[in-house]
Length: 159
Image (cartoon, rainbow, N blue to C red):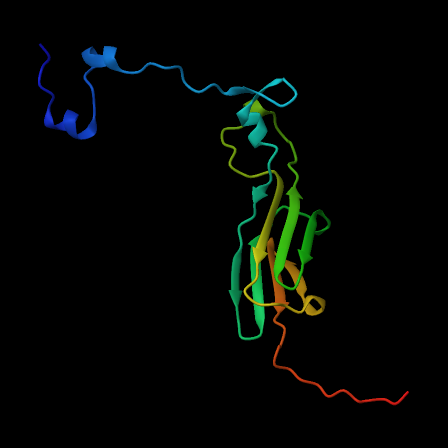
């Protein structure tokens, strides 16, 4: 005869320790998996090969779209900023300067390695007038909007 389960046990699905015989004890998911070339590798190792996504703030004024991102610790020559009329991509790499061994660290929270971010822009921009500035680790991209209402007169030449 089984004992009646308490309200808390019914609500949460909790099981008393002496009732654990009915619990599914399938093995946990393995950290190791077989790669395409047949070698065993850890999914943790595979995660370190990916690029991190750069965090950005994007806002617009009446005549400009501004993209800001923290890139502290990245040299300007290690940055690649590519723009088209409707998107901007920032790509780079933050290199770690090792001053201590892995066993000496008490905390490791900083990101080191490749990063990138592509932002789709809400309006077309003038690629030729765009400007990139770095100040105190903050990257600021100033992207002037195209003035689609602007008109100019063309002179007709005779040939």
